[in-house]
Length: 596
Image 1 (cartoon, helix red, strand yellow):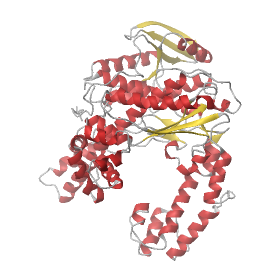
Image 2: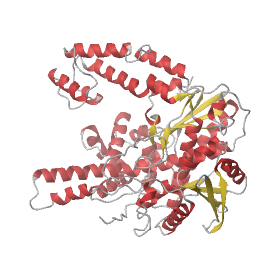
Image 3: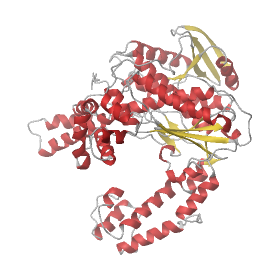
Image 4: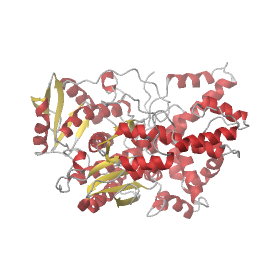
């Protein structure tokens, strides 16, 4: 099917100057592999090759460190984890890179790039990230065409140079090259952060984790046995059902047991179960909660993922189609709050924890240029500001309405409240409504910086075509309408969630640079667990969509907090110029993630 070029682009105004953009005087150094050696090519700022060389693999960390100490340089490589992990192990940190795999994915699908750009004809560059976990990254919705099995990523220097030239040409010929340069730079900076997060690790106290599990689940049982409190909750569920043999860990069998008890639910979700008044509901919800903790972050997880006082997850930048990160090992993006007491700084160090209040609605206000919504957010809780603006009477309703607007809810409280937002904040609501219409019509939408959503699948188009046929049945028409609405909800949220992910990348990239500028401290035995590069410096240790955790020497904790706050302000200016939107942080310094 021919590529459809969409004119629906979230960002239209000019963007500011990027702190993560390539400096004008920087040099590009492209890396490739040839046998056991590394081959390198030197390019000037215009991308013209100036020479080549060969570096032995074991000498690469020192050679890269020498180049980093000189003029600004940006490293170009096929895949950041495959190159940067070894450099960090060797004690070398780099300031900037261009990740060819990640940038290929962005440029290949961006509606800002000319349809005739030579990127889709090179499927080798569609290979997955070089991680040590085979788990697939999740998609936001399965509404795009499924990719074929990906081959291995190209490694030779010539292949890297050719792909880099194709990408530069695609950006130069794009309808808004400035946005794509910023996006690819931020995406590549995020790739560096992801590798550094794993290398440094999140300080983790296994004894505290064990105490939390014992308090919630009961003492650690013998192998193959069930913790006492989980066992007790299961017993109470079976008693309430009157079914001593009920299988609580099989969804179909549990649903049959519930149906026999007169609880006619279609799933065992908390929200659906809560609609029924029955003695089984309370113990069943407790059982599900305890079982989820045991399976996702219980003792087996602790044994597998926490070593030498560090939790080292595998992050996947761009692992979700919106540009949000995924995790292919360790479940960093699903850590329950009840385990935060196990996140504990090293002696003499502190955790600096910051999360952004209502990131996505604030991003929506800036994208739409909606000053009324920006005024409601300025200097205060955005949902309280929506109430003050007269849109809805309570904060709870403001949150329901805003989430409904961004996620396309049309029934229940959201369906009742969203029209009130349209009257009070017409520009913001018009933006997401337009994105939804584009998606329903089979179009492609893009984020503020130019990441575009997947095209509809061939099956989606076939369903729409069938519904318009003179012989279409009522079922055909119903399915086509449902699929169109589903895609509209996807594109409605894509532009907001994707732009929020871009803001977060810019934020982290700036935090990373500011922390690197702080002075080193003497190395301690505990801090050495963070590796050679991070044992003496404050560094990012955790990321979760709109939250970062920095592990900092006690004497640098205040400076790290300022760096995080200033970077949030800078990220807002970087993406949205002088539009008056702020990104307030819940910022705290503590020894544990619970704030003690």
